[in-house]
Image 1: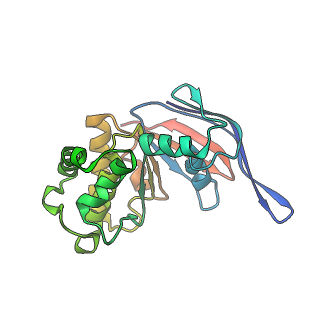
Image 2: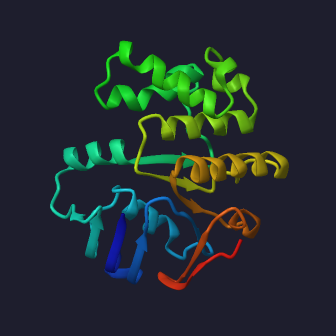
Length: 227
């Protein structure tokens, strides 16, 4: 589904070019649960921004489902990003003034749905993450784990091709972290949702089927995890 070939990424700082990603070659198949690990400054964030169609300024080629998106304008990339990628962040990134239902509904509205068509889809996905009874609550009325479940529901509601989860348990205690990771694993195994997990925590890697380690802008390890 995702194939990166000889990716190099530079940032210009004053008069210096910083080489952030160095000849990265990577493929991710549909249905995989991949962990990306590396220390701060290793290039993890740059890599997932590129995979998630946020950053298009790089050298090399990115093939998504066999096609190249190089040269696509911002409108096309925004449409593809909204339809193909779900994002889950450490800080949940929910809209505080919106209800749980409204937060989850938002990607569908961006995708052109009218309000009458969203009801079944939103209710269905909130049921899958165990929040059917929280539709009218606001984020501040929920626990951290419940807020992250809302974020996962929002990421999944328009049935994206893959989910990028960037340190999704970083703000949660260990018990809640395991609950969230079990939910990700369930979505991956039962519904074949492709998940790319970015984490610093080796314990979270145990839930994944593959580990990619990055250091100083290079992939230093890429291996299947034995279960």
